[in-house]
Amino acid sequence: LPENSPSLRLLSMVVHQKQKMDFKWIPWKFRLTAAKCDELLAAKPQKVARAEGLQLHTILMDEPPAMEIANGAIGMHALRQMFETFSFAMSMAEVAHLSSWKGYYLKFLSLMTHRYDVDTGLRSPTILEAQAADKALMNIAIDLVTERSWSWDDALYEVTHIRADMTLLLQPRPKLPKTTAVPRVDTFSGKGNSQ
Image 1 (spheres, rainbow, N blue to C red):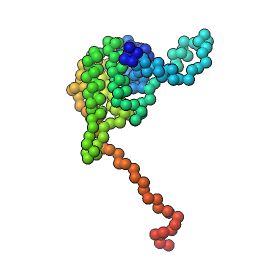
Image 2 (tube, one colour; image 1 turned 120 degrees about the vertical axis):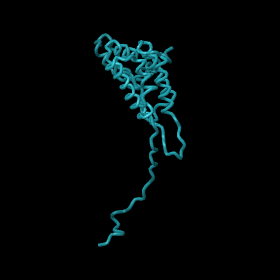
Image 3 (cartoon, rainbow, N blue to C red; image 1 turned 45 degrees about the vertical axis):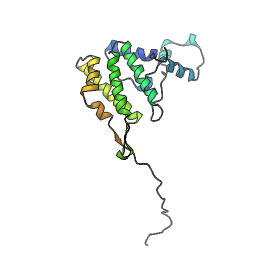
Image 4 (tube, rainbow, N blue to C red; image 1 turned 30 degrees about the vertical axis):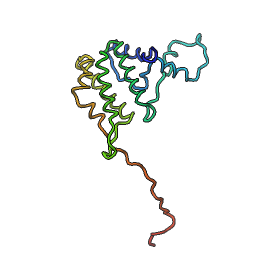
């Protein structure tokens, strides 16, 4: 189903990285299902169709469809779907087993979405903080795979269950104080100035 299948572009990126054994973190904005990719392409303003005049490189270098990743711009359902889509792509390309990816993202989402009592003064990571954490964790796994010749399954297990990096990167943060309006002082009135 297009709603669950990784987009062709995402699958191609993963397969290309596996063939070259040159793994790089894939930004969340490109982890699209086939349906979401079609939806974004349909929403793009259509360029003048001159297929016969287009060279292959101009088609390939076209701006790829991407989802907006910003604090408040993506909900938990969409985030979980993004992780599942990426996991399916990595499993379909036989990079690692689906169960390894599922273990990783379920723990990641659990830590990320933990709710704290108001009186603790703590909050969960924002979407952008969580994306930075995922990038750091994937770079640890990539180093284990490329530098130490670990399997992806072993690297994911290490990052998910053995090392403390995930807990540290997704630890609670202090809530930002709410900004209150500061009374404005008229500096030109001369009040309080001794001359």
